[in-house]
Image (cartoon, rainbow, N blue to C red; front, side, top):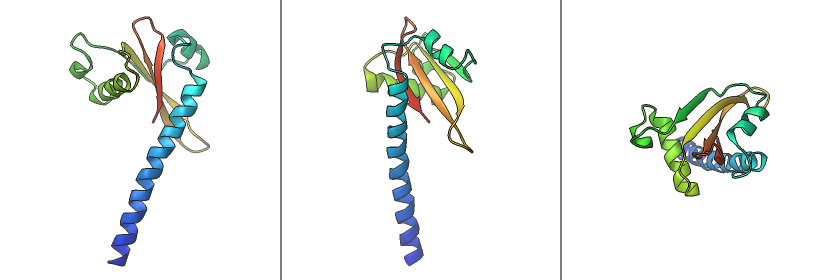
Length: 120
């Protein structure tokens, strides 16, 4: 019984930590890639023209019509968060520390201007 209570407590604190960590990483990413000031070409140049892992354009029926539900959900969340329509999204697989990888997501409007960025 005690083990179960301790395990539950550790699990819940880890979830809280992850949410805080993700929020902090997102804020750092936004500081490096300020929305509204950069274009998709600028972001590509910062990645030394290495192509993104994924690049998707808004389907005619909107993001809910996308064949990629995870990316669509992230685009919809970015639109909710920023109030700006996402026309294109790109995801890069990047190093994250010494022994791990992460995804960085970039969201663009119809003029290829960066509207949002996110760490995963």
